[in-house]
Length: 231
Image 1 (cartoon, one colour):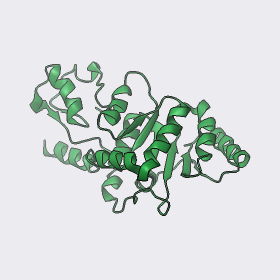
Image 2 (image 1 turned 180 degrees about the vertical axis):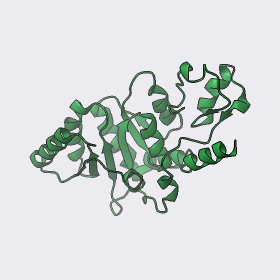
Image 3 (image 1 turned 120 degrees about the horizontal axis):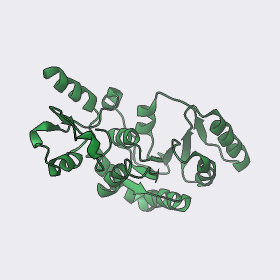
Image 4 (image 1 turned 30 degrees about the horizontal axis):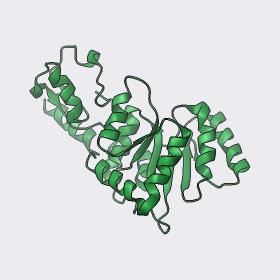
């Protein structure tokens, strides 16, 4: 089961020997519904094992180390150019934006870069997300199950700026409950949270970073595979 906390009942109203979940808070949903504890396993979310191979992580944000922000655009695309324009205007951050395979969005952001006069990096589709997340200080993205778990695996705090009602609400709640980031529904909120996280010697970012590091299960895919092979 991939989403956290808001677990759809259709996932466990079936016959199964075991239910594999990303964390114990999500397993508790099944326990409360009458699923025996011994049938639940919480190995974590099976991200690529490349996250387990990461050796070096970002130093704390500072004038010397930079304040790197990665905006992974995979939701609310019509509103992304304006948010990128506002993020690019923040002189204290180093911005990278990913557009996936959306060539039109890539061209639009190139126009934003030219018109804003700010030099930020634009990346289209990439299979190097583990390295990107490990090297950035702060992710801005939607509350997708894989996205949230990948940023957790990289120990990278996240500002959630888009949530699909129902299935993604639990993922966003996981971030806020563990104080591993923030939810920002408007551009104003995103900008305010970015600035707040890096202010006062990045005090809030440091708290988020410590907390999200406690959730890391980067070898979850390997642990899950070992369990399945043992059956």
